[in-house]
Every structure is written in C-alpha cells, then in structure tokens.
Length: 258
Length: 175
Ligand SMILES: [Zn+2]
Image (cartoon, rainbow over all chains, first blue to last red):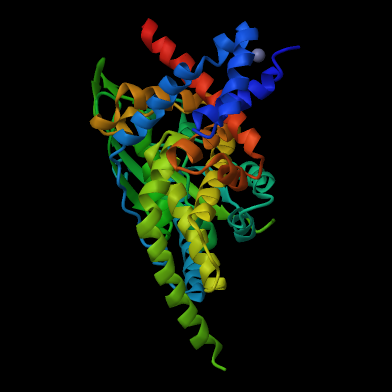
C-alpha cells in the first residue's frame, strides 16, 4: 500500500487537524490517505471541511451568554445539627403520611371533599444513595462510573394509587423525575415533599407550591423544579380546557444499604 | 489540642478556597455541563455538585491542590453518570434534546443549535472529548488525562463528534 496510514489512523489525524495540533507530516499523511480512500474523503472530509465544521463549534461557543450564579458551596449547617434535622424531618413525614392516609380514607367514605390542601397522596418513593456512594463519585479519577450505575439502580420510584388532582403530567406520574443534588445525600436528607402545581388551560405549569416540606429545602426544590419541567394534560370542563391543579408527593429515603 | 477549633479553622479556609473556585469556574463549568446534558437546570445541579465535592475535599485536606482540570473531570463524571442514570430511569434510548426554553435568544444561533443537536446524538465520552478541547481549551493530551484515556483516543472521538455535527449541518441545509 502506498497510503501509509489506515482508516483508523485517518480518523485520529482528522481529530488532530480539527484541534489545530497537526504537524506538516500529519497533514501530508492525511492528504495521501484521502487521495487513496474515497470513503474517508466522504466521511471525514478534507482539511477545508474540517475547518468549516470546527468553525461552527467556535461560533456556538462565542454565542454563549449564560452566566448562572451558584450558591456558595458551604451554606450547610454543622453536621450534627443536620443529622438531627433530618431525623426530625423523617418523623414529621411519617406524621404527615399517616394524617394524609386518614384524610384519604375519610374522603373515600364520602367525607368532606372541600378540605383539599392537607390531602397528599404518596405514590413516589425516591431512594437516595448513601453518603458513601456519593463520596466515591467525588473521589475523581478511578472508579466513578460503576458506582454511578449502582446509584442509578438504587434510585427507584414506585408509582401507586390515585389522587385528588384534576390534571396529570403527560407521560404519567413517572414523567416527574426529581434530581436532588448531591447535597441532599450528604445531609442524609429524608422526608416527603408534597407539591401543588397550578396548570393552565394549555397544560403549562404556572406555579409550584410546596404543600408540605420534607424539611430539606434542597429536596423540596428538586421536586418543584422537576414538576415545572413537564407538560400536563389540561383539565376539561364541558369540553373546554380550563386551569387545574396537580397534587403529588415524593418520599425521599436515604439508602443506608451501600 | 482543641480538635473542634482546628476543624472550624479548616472549614473556614476550605470555604474561602471553595468560594474562590466558584467565582473562577462557575460559568465555565455550567456552560460545559449545559452542553453535555442539554438542560440548564440539570447543568446547574451538576455544577453545584462539583463545587460541593471540591469543598468537601478541601475541608478534609486544606492543603490539597484543586485545579481546573480536577473540576472539569468531576463535572464530566457527573454528566456521564447523569446521562446513564437518565437512560436507565426512562428506559428510553439516550436522547438529549435541546430544550430551547433554557437558552437565550442570542444563544439559539444555527451554529449553537446544530452543535447541541449533534451532542445529543453522541455517546457522552465523545461529547466530552469535543467540549473539553474546543470548548474548554484543553489540548488532546490534557483532555486525555482528564478522561483517563490516550491523546489518540481523544482525537478519534473528536473526529467522530465532527462527523455527527457535519451530518446535522447537512440535514439543516436540506430542510
Ligand atoms: Zn480511509
């Protein structure tokens, strides 16, 4: 063969050219390969073509205007306090749940239908990975990928039951997927967040209210954020789409297992 | 020796250094992550996580050197595990659609949308290779260090990413 380099090498050379790291001999080798390989000529393109494509990347980068402001990372209460707080939150959640259960039973048996806001129906249980999992993700370098998968599997949600709500997310309950930041795992956060989402006649979420807090603002925020991100099937009255309310609750549990 | 006192001092120092990192890198990392995952909210969460890990690392060892590379590596790992988790949770093929609501009008140029569409079709390792180099400004050697691979593997991934972008650009012309 006269071309000298194979097609894999040609791909590497194309990348080298794209990144502006090519020497003159790299360029020669690439040109010679393209001259003898119509497939790479079509798939990878010549030097001009590479420049044209990479210019798009540069243009996109230069168009970026987004400048988000983060919270400073250490606005957490001291460790012991946090732990006590999460216990308190867990206990409170249990109390809320049993209360909600009673109210639901009442309503099923023809009880007062008007007393809406205290009634939460728990159908989502989110199991958070343990702090140890999270630390291994932070321990950059080696084995974060397998750990991450383990984390994914432990993030189980189990839908069940009905609710007093007049709209539903498109895609069902499972369409709302909160992604609490790792802060929540670090704090061993636990608890139940109940939300009310006001939905307009087009199915757009207008406002999310925390009806019951889990005790962890981070968890609460993640639920509302997720709820505001989905579309809903609007409520219909006499064939007309009108405003409605979606109610939902998410129970978070730290996963002490791993 | 008063341990509580020492640890309070460490905490303050760790916090000061972490705040310095936030000031210097928050925009860069958030933009990188928004490109990786295609969603501003998720990118913010992931950025926050990176700084939280950094803070924790510094609290444990205030002398520790934390470079931009460390932050980018943490961000990359976070994005990749998010994308995998999303795949498992939804049990759908991996798709990262550009949610245009998250992007300002002046960011929704043809180039920006084409790039994001292409990134959404790529395995995250290829997106990361392209973005760490042409977005974050690392050489293929440095990007290889961050990704735990070789320079040639990074260059090849960049080439694959370019192919995807070319395809998207061609589709745009045909529309
Ligand atoms: Zn070839």
